[in-house]
Length: 56
Image (cartoon, rainbow, N blue to C red; front, top):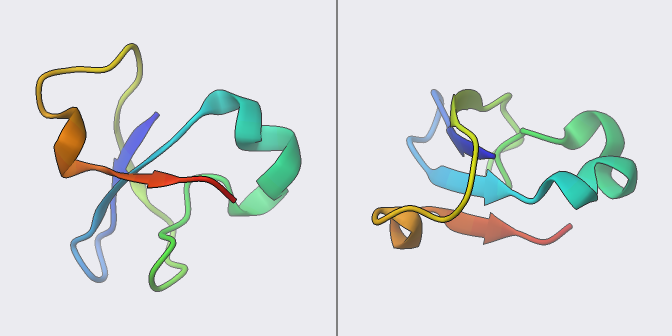
C-alpha cells in the first residue's frame, strides 16, 4: 500500500502483512508519525523506487 505524508511530504509504502505487527501505526509516516494519505494499492509499479519501504 502506497502513501504520502501531508506533513513532511515523504512517500512510503507498507506491505499488508505488517498490519498485525504495527497495528494502529499502519499507514503512518515513518519519519514524523503523521497519518499518511493513501495513494494506491497493488503490485510494484514503475515509480516504486520513489517510495520508502517501511519494515516496522
